[in-house]
Length: 158
Length: 246
Image (cartoon, rainbow over the protein chains, first blue to last red):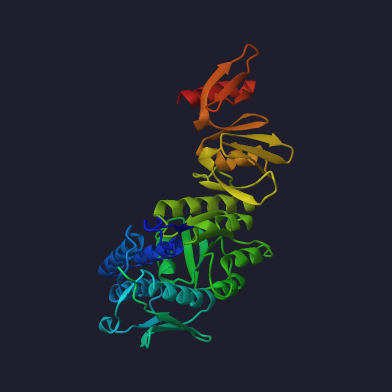
């Protein structure tokens, strides 16, 4: 079951749904930390709140690439809460990404590629985002060949 | 029963740690083992005897549904309960005859209800006590009469069930469904949700009943909110009247 978001009022293409599977598993992970590390459990819940606020907001207007990168970092921290010893992450400095992008431009491809590796492979995996000539290059590596995806950061007009 | 022996299987280590903690705190559970995937689970299943397999649906290597299918080949397979973030996998779960289906993160009450169902199923399988379980399933998977797969139906929406040969014909506002089960079996399973046998051929969800009318011959008619009228057997009338008054 996926939580479908409201269609954007300006008729733009709708954003991908928030995965109920992801939300349920993050909540289960947060519950698991309550006894042994209550502060971290609270952090996980707060970050899930931030993640959902960003994804479910009614205004789908373009955001700065650095905002989208921060959202992607939140998403990856939530995934690390689910798989604490499995996922390593490398992200560019927010100062190195520019422009305004559609929400999901960076986080969407990261979710897709990481989801495939987590679903199909056991063992550790790494997520690396690096700057490229026209945007970012994403590499997600598990036990098999890495998924490499080019993410152009095309300026979206306001 | 001295307590259930449970094998919990999940590729998500934190979700596994959470449910392990809940299970260890339950007085119904004697021992908990865990496995981080389907292969490890198969290994443990071959090495020991378990009453319950608490199983994630989607995992790398061997998916939970596939593992549940493999279990059918065991002489005395554990009862399978799925615990998953995939709420939409419930139909698949019931198709492999899972006893229950829980969505993460599970509450202690809901997990306890599943444990009670496992206790009951184990007792029935091993010919022991067959006490009525304290809880009924919230959702049941029923065959579409058209033959187009299964459909999940909330138990509370089912108004009544008619015996139809080897099958039960189930009535809900969404339509009619069939299930290969006896009314006696359904009464045992669904009794905690308010279902009771009013006639050899009819099981009714009393939360949908609005009026019991006595007839001169000692039998009665039970009217449901949707206008359905069901015959009530003579020997059932007094008990049913007491129950409706309560």
